[in-house]
Image (cartoon, rainbow, N blue to C red; front, top):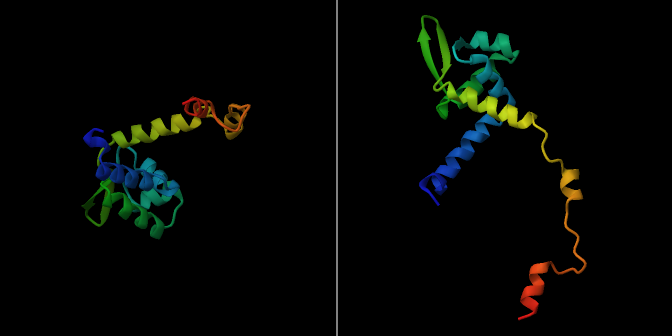
Length: 126
């Protein structure tokens, strides 16, 4: 396995996906977009409470998705890398495509005439 798939990297990627797995965090990222936004602007766009927005912004900052810059009395947030929006867009496109439903998978199950799958027959013959 390549270094990318090392246990440390897998855990880090899982943490990033967990952060992105929250609908409010996604809404905040989309509200910030490719520009910058203050907490009040994010609240206006998302209709989330100030406490909730601040909580989620802290989580997004901790993993490096968002940076903050004070300008006078306000703090403005921006994406550290706007490629994140492209990633979210790709996942949205993936999610909107017709996916294999549980019913489809169940209908495609292979029926065996014996309780032993074909591979068992190979080993029984030895």
